[in-house]
Length: 212
Image (tube, rainbow, N blue to C red; front, side):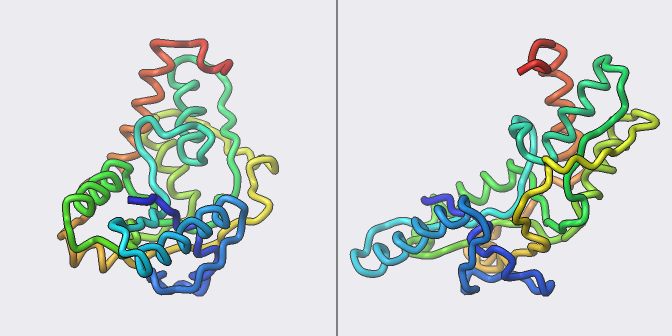
């Protein structure tokens, strides 16, 4: 299995349609371009050399243990510092208007597993994604609500804006569902609750992490 990424599509789906694996690859950043190169190379190897394997293109996902360099986990980390005692109530955020379908990382891994144990996945490409597109601000607001904190002020930080952002992404994972019967089992509220709880617990056991 090669874990590619939805970043290979770039802004292909910004007109609002669901992105299929047959869509043109148009990466909008170096990360997406590097994944696209390997993605295309492996597809050629699958076809010409009959190498066994498959490619997954996971869309946005999050959950416990997600690094705080990622936007939703960054929000959860900052809120967790407030929950465990930091008196400030400013939450530094980036672009809250871009739209993503965010999946629980545990559902993402379950999809990988089901594909790995299915022989019919060989030589194919699969999107792994949820099905409800939302503005990023929704996930931030839900985390604030879950935290129980009052008077949290969102402060837009230019440094958290991507120079080249993907404005809208909504994937089509019909091939994955038809082959494996996979479907998401975690609702987004549970995912965000678990993510916040992870950071609260981690900060409680190691307060010095805030300085890392």
